[in-house]
Length: 78
Length: 330
Image 1 (cartoon, each protein chain N blue to C red):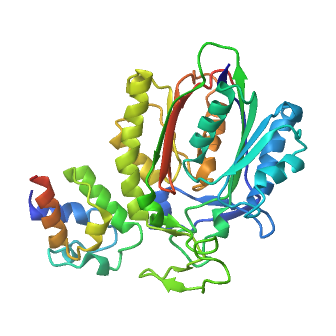
Image 2 (cartoon, rainbow over the protein chains, first blue to last red; image 1 turned 45 degrees about the horizontal axis):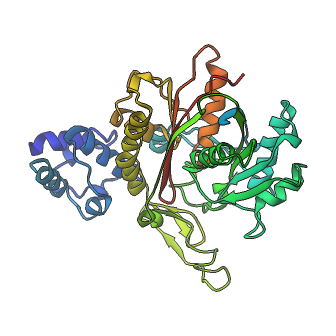
Image 3 (cartoon, rainbow over the protein chains, first blue to last red; image 1 turned 90 degrees about the vertical axis):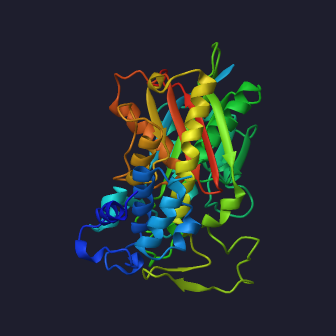
């Protein structure tokens, strides 16, 4: 499971944000385009693409794309 | 004597609110919602829905039990169903009660009606669902306002002298640990109106609500639905000894297009008839399933609807599912 591919899939959920803004250290909730449906869209992407159903309480504690990636990767190898 | 759904009707209040074009509208698929006026209550909508059945030939005297599913009763007491007995000019020698459920309510209502009929306690049950979540939602809560619509539905469930039930394999589920994820915290007995100060909060998106308004953690509710609904589908198929393709139509609680599409995929129901229509109603809570059934019946005259799977899920947390036979409905 690669970071680059994860960032690509993450970025694909947004339509108005420049691709360059999506980096490992991006605090995704600070993105201008982040809205009330964004969390659901990202959780859905993680489930659909990686087969991982993150608990909302865990997701809420993750702030950067890297942190999200590491959490998903951890669960995928179980 | 076995229970069957004999007739259905729904009523939407006149006032329409349109959802502005936005990513939320795009994702949810909800374009317009019907909303009660200030003086209208859920019971008024329920009366309008029931009167449609009576105009369509159902006899008031025929009804021997009235079930009202609502989370917006006229009073804490008496039961709104008792008040409706009088407003609908039903007989006195009937049972009438409210039950307080949301999105799972229609399935529970069918289960209760089935229980009453198949135990010989009733012959013709009038199951009313009626909801006005708009009255609980803060006017400046942009996360919830575009999601919910008001409505009522009336369903006649009757006993028939046949060899098989028209409401089968009823599955129930409850998880009170999730109560906090979809709640109006104050106003009832736990945090009484008058004793409980109004506390306003503004979330990071600028949505305003108070402790007397509806609160929903969308992420938790979606997660709950994705975990729970596939298991309900499996359980019903197993009890019915059926494969997915044997079911004529799948009708899940019509919350929003996004979650319905995800559930369809999760349950392996692509290429199988599956209802997904929230555009003109929004989430009408316990009414989404009967509204869907009315629309499916009017759209699919030719289709055999002998095995229709219903699954409701939401506030409680509560869920339920069953298989219904609609083939006898004109």
